[in-house]
Amino acid sequence: METVPDNSEGNIKRESTHNYPCPSCGGNMEFAPECQALICPYCGGKTDVEKTSYGIQEHDFFSAEDTAHQNWGNEKRVIRCQNCGAQTVLDETDAAKFCAFCGSPHVVKQEESPGIVPESLIPFKITRENALEGFKMWIKNRFFAPKALKNEFKGGRLSGVYIPSWTYDSNAYSTYTAEAGTYYYETETRWVEENGHRKMVTEQVRKIRWRYVSGRYDEFFNDVLVNASNQVNEGLMKKLEPFHLNELVMYKPQFLSGFLAERYSINLKEGWDRAKNHIREEINNAVIRQINADEVRCLSVDTTYCDIKFKHILLPVWMSAYIYKGKTYRYMVNGQTGEVQGHAPISPLKVGLVILAFIAVISALVFIFNKSR
Image (tube, rainbow, N blue to C red):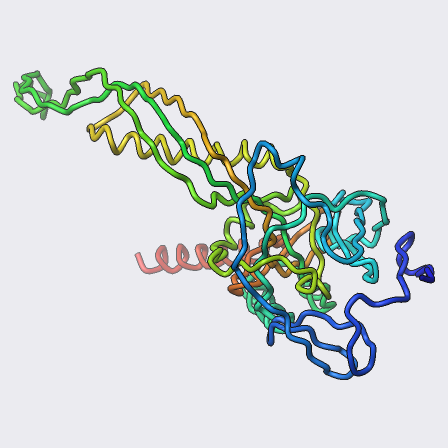
């Protein structure tokens, strides 16, 4: 297999062979969200990709490192952005001219395993064209965004990226202690001063009677979703939800053809720690509801987790990023639902003009009011 350097991409090299050759013309086929099949961009040839959810499994958390598969199907490689550190999994035939996460052109190939193979994924349903339209509407509504943002948007730097996530299942057995408070009311009399005179008033005062409580709470948690990327803003990723996990299908490398897949930067154990934070919050809220008091204080919960299972899944996201005055701004579209979220810089000039206009309006109103008196 001949390797040909591609000077436009630094140390990234393009292979001369194709992973999914078109039966008609031999061109490399890519997954098309609009028809959920592999399409040849040269002759339009189509090859269906079988989708099935049968066989998707949760894997044992504690034996994961010994039993998890590392072969993603077809030859894969990892590229690393020298600017933001994002690691992206590509087919050996694919090349990246810029980083999907920060827009930097500085990407290099590195010899590193892509990591634990995804168990399943949600295929892209939103096309690039629809994602661009979503961006257009989103940007149009960003009044304070500088003109440079809209100019960069016209450049069309939009990448389809599968974002890594973990899901966790676990039985949680909890014991708790707390103090439960019940409201009661007492009549109290006090002196107040009103119009220069003192008078006696009687009122009902709410008080709390506290009692010690303890008990058990058990629950099974299914598919607790944890973002496994340090490159994607957690707040934006949450705003892109929901991802409908009932549409997960078995992982096949064909779904990644024409797209990028980020290598997880939050490992399995770190992901479980984050999942436990979510589970603890859910348990605490459930325990408070179970106590059924007016107020609860000094809550202490001890939880044991059993039968912990996990899945490594990929979620579809269209991403665009660029650097404005040294800061990276990112805009994302849920590749399943079309939800758009992002951050935009604010133009000081536009803000200043709005403030001046506001001051002018207030000044005019004050002038009119004073003149009419």
